[in-house]
Image (cartoon, rainbow, N blue to C red; front, side):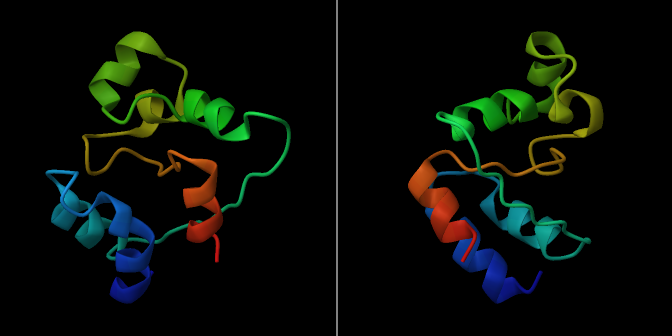
Length: 94
């Protein structure tokens, strides 16, 4: 992912996420598999449950079978990005 693409996708987190710069640097320095999840009602909430809490340590306690619990390392390298809101997801997939 290029820096410009990363900045566009993660713009909503600028100023809100303390590790924004580290997150952006990480996502632009490693291979990325982008997947658009579509489907039933509440797909965003359902996918977020599948991913687990953003903090992998918390995910291991609350949702031990989630993606982040199994593969996340820390708040920056947490294995997967999933959108917060359906409208953000639509923007991220453009």
